[in-house]
Image 1 (tube, one colour):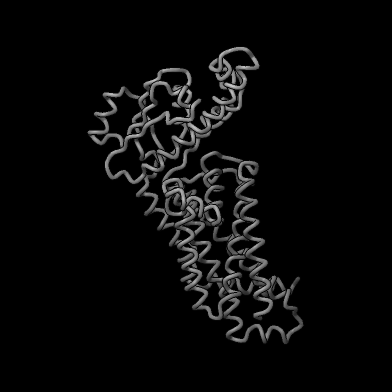
Image 2 (cartoon, rainbow, N blue to C red; image 1 turned 60 degrees about the horizontal axis):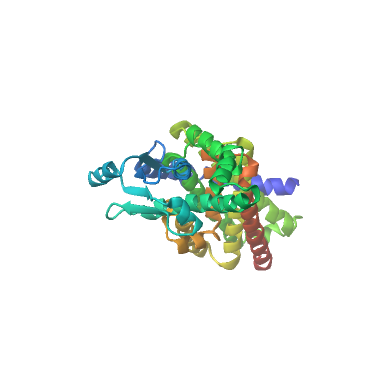
Amino acid sequence: MKKILSICLFEIKRTFKKKSALVVMFAMPLLFTFLFGSIFGKDAVHSLQIALVDEEQTALSKDIIQRLMLDGMITYELVAASEAEELLASKEVQGIVRLEKGIASKLRNEEPAISFQSSPGMATAPLVKQQVNQVIQGVGVYVAAAQVGSSYFDESWESVYGRITDNGGQIQVWTEQQTSISSGNPVTGISYSSAGFSIMFVMIMMLSMTGILLEARQTGIWSRLFTTPVTRLQVLFGYFLSFFIVGWIQFFLLILLSSILFDVNWGTPVALIFLVTALLLCVVGLGMAIAGFVKTVEQQNAIGTLVIISTCMLGGVYWPISIVPDVMQKIAKVIPQTWAMEGFTTLISEGGNIGDIVMPLIVLLGFAIVFLSIGLSRIKHAF
């Protein structure tokens, strides 16, 4: 164990002695967070202003409106149809969502029940459409359930639906939770950017650190190490431990600095520890896997940087996944950053606990197992 710690502490000290490493670890992510966070807004991410017109005026339409207004990234304003047109013409809103008459029958027949009109050139129109569709799909499930229940209870489906939503049914419980969460700690542009760029620059730093393995082979450090009473496993574990500890120091300080400088609330500490740990295992594994396939540090940096930048774009680090086309959203499901961002935004916006981020944790640990298995097997043969 003493030999492992010696290797680990040596690499940690060497890393923090480099000024360029400190710039990448702390200065760059904070700068990018400030720049991108300022663009999206430091207040709650409510840059999308949408007029909401209720042409139906029933309990069902009001229930849909309530769910639409829970969204943390879109601000809906309930107005009359004529006023909505005026607001859109004056560019005070970016679009109009209309709950059309006969919405109940359309839902039962699986027909479009809501129309959306956006201003010309609105790049975020897909985000609004997706959010509206998700709400409609969710409500549609309960409408179908209410229809089935009406045949058993010998009453109208509207009555059954009302009991589901008003008397402790799952929709009502979910609504109360989300209302409390949304009003308590909404996602902001600065907090979203803080999570995203912390992930990205930790990945860049881990890529640089895992390049040490290639450097050690090129300079003959490994050959000299193996002339001493130390095993290959001890050497590998010493390096791995140094990568992991440096990653944790970087992420911890970024969390601390963003909390102080940008007032970012990262959520429950215990859940945050589990999520960061899973992410770091995944990132270190990815770096080691790349190191196992390339021959030089230059190749590691070139290929690794390309992989990190491209996957960060696809994984929602720069912008929310919900605004990209459906095909890109499907691709994003196989990218670690997607699940890391999902976990962090859940903790930031909902103040969730470990139970709320189980899926991101499982997926990240799955990626970690795959990457580490590939990396360790390749490095074992390469060194």
